[in-house]
Image 1 (tube, rainbow, N blue to C red):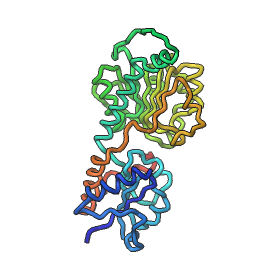
Image 2: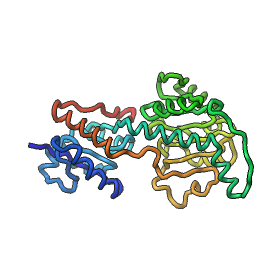
Image 3: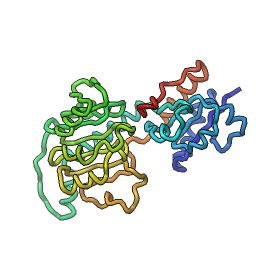
Image 4: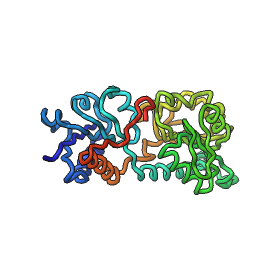
Length: 315
């Protein structure tokens, strides 16, 4: 008998529809994927694994015999916060394509800052024709905070494009050609050295509010910041202060405390802020579906659950 795998999601309608088309095709012959709303009581009780994307925790709780859930997102902070500690194991999506996509975005927006695009945009508005000296990539130090799968890929891609790259992580990491820092003292060193600072750490109890006024005031005069991690890692009020009064010159923000970013937010109109609608590394449905199918197929064949999230660490 083909097992039933619930799909539980409160994501946007377009995203849900995309997954509802891709997942059944990828899991054909392995399992039948059914939206939570279409499950019978018996199917809810028999489900051992579910696929989730921004799920309602009450719906996950209604699947009382789950062993694990496969997230379709790399970020799992909402799941770790809302699912009980003794609930199902949480498996985050680890897709090499996502790391590639993120590293591309980090390189693109680092080049945007490196080539002074914000300054030239301001000059265009003011009808100013003025050239500025161009530095070589090797003359720019880019600090990457968070050297997990996404951060490591981004750091190596920046290095391959000639930038002087340094990194920070919670514990010591080794990346070829990249100076690694870790711990509080290491964070301070990266802040002080970076011309461009890239945030790519996961949101956990330890990283929530991690980049606040003290940290921003430790940055170099004229430094720029890219936040492709999670909004609550960065203190928005402190950021605006650092942009208005120094030392920061510009911020590229793809993630926010509240999404979509409210129309009332001062970030929309701030001349030193570039606002992006959380597009730095969207999940690629085709590649992610194959990985999900491999994980679930292996589970039904051998009983092996993929590596799950450490609930204490939050990732």
